[in-house]
Image (cartoon, rainbow, N blue to C red):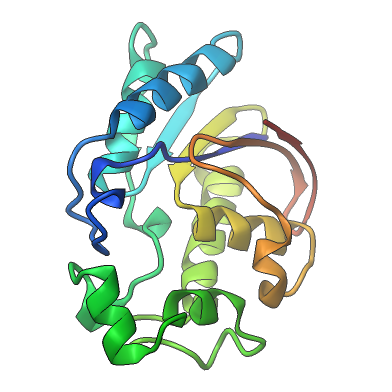
Amino acid sequence: MRLVLVRNAERASYKSGRWSLEETELSPKGAEQSTTIADALRGMEIDHVYVSQTRRSVATVQPLADGRRVDIQVDKAFNPLDIGDHAGSRYEDTRRILGNDIFSELLTTPQPDKRYIAGGETLSEMAERAWRRILELTHDECGAQSSLVVITHEEVIGAVLCRMSDMPLSRLWWVGWTSGHTSVCEHYARYQAAWTVDT
């Protein structure tokens, strides 16, 4: 199984400063990134494409899907970390209420199963849902010889790479990537993988 993890392209609402699944379209830079992603993967045979529920992910995949006969599946397992009661809030409002570095704290906590925002999920819960879905896809639904592209969010990619490399979630940010970054992973067994990162 070849697993291609793609961080979705830059969204326009990134500039507006809101936490939101109901994002606006891609920014001009994001549209350019989505074309670059499609160009980078043009020579690869792709059997399955999964994206998170955000508009950003769906927009990122469009240039890749154009001209290919591949179904695009929207899957909530690849959604970003659920920040509960603060979804849709402005960054500065959330930081004023919860503390300046709340999102960084959620993603770098040494206890990823303990820290969360009211109504949301822990980093461990997010990692578990994404990893469980990757295992279902790579072992049951897509087949061992297929290529799978997942377009998702930076914290989801980091969590999956931590699981694949047997790193603790507290080291999530040891792997750095920007919007539109692509990680190509060769998945060999249920809990073993070798992976390379292509920028």
